[in-house]
Amino acid sequence: MQNAKIVHAPSDVAARLAELGLKEELLWEALRQANLYRVRTTNHHPRLYRYQVMTAETIAALRDLLVPEGWQKLDEGQYELTLHPNGTMAIAVASGDDNVAQVERTPSNKSPKGRHTIAAVASNRQADMFAHLLPVKEIDTEVVRDTWVLLHRVTKDGIHSELSRPTEISDDGMIAFWSERILFGKIELDGDPVQIAAPDQPDIDIFISKKSA
Image (cartoon, rainbow, N blue to C red; front, side, top):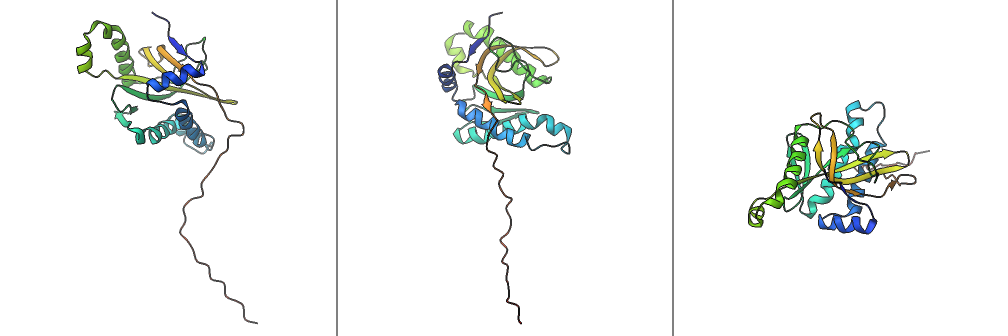
C-alpha cells in the first residue's frame, strides 16, 4: 500500500483546493456556522441531535455556500453528499477521531459508517486501481465520481479539519486509509463572535393616550 499524499502547507492547500473547485475559507465558514448550533445545545436537546448537530449543520452550510456556485445537493438513501458541478466529485461530512489534521497520524471517522460509505470508498479504490489501465477515450466517456470526506474534530481550543479521500474501510464502517489528505489550519474559537438574530415578529402599533386629570 502506498503512503497517503498529505497536503498541509498553506500555499499547497490553496492550490490543491483550487484544482477541486474549492476554497479553504468556504469550508471554514461551513464549519463555523455549524459550530454556532453546536454551542447552543443543552442536556435538554435529544441526545441523537447533540451527537450529530456538527455534522448535520456543516452539510447544510456547505450546500448553502456551494449550491449558488453550481454544486448540487445529492441524497443517496441516507447518504448526504454535495456534488461538484461536473459530477466527478462529491463531498461527505463526518466527525473524526483525535488524529484529524495530524500529519504523522492516520485519522478515522468517529462513528461507524453504513453501506453507502463503504460502497463509495470501494469505488474510490477501484478507480485508483484501474484508471491507469483504461484507454483515455474510455475514461472520458464514463464519469468516475470521487467521494471526499470533510472530517472535523472540535476541541476546547478550536476546530480541526481536513478534506480527505478514503480508499480503505473495514466491514464495520471505520475508514482505515486515505489516498490523499488536505489538512487545514485550526479554526480558533476563543473570541469568535456569536450573532443570534432576533426572531421575526409582526410590527405592533402601540397607542399611548394621555391620562385625563
